[in-house]
Image 1: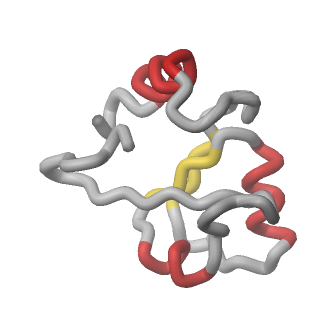
Image 2 (image 1 turned 60 degrees about the vertical axis):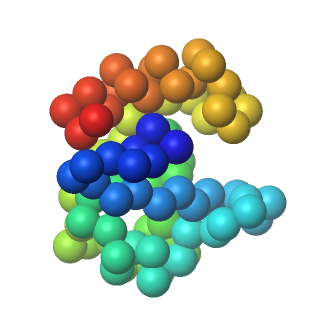
Image 3 (image 1 turned 90 degrees about the vertical axis):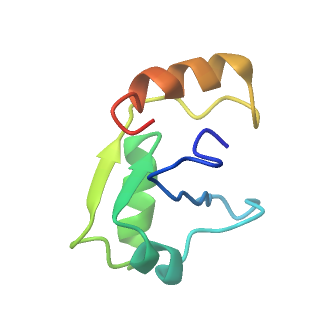
Length: 86
């Protein structure tokens, strides 16, 4: 949602959990120029699932994945972590 209506960047969101509403898949990986994950374990999961991320810029934000969707505290942390992209 931070990138909604952004004038330069288009963003999509997907999860690594089996419970995620939208699960990350190769089609989304192929679409992306840059990939952000909150924790290193998310990067590891992408690799374990044999998703081809080798050609992508992938950044681990080092944000603990404990927040609920649209949590105000998470939004502030993400704004700081993604400052150069927002």
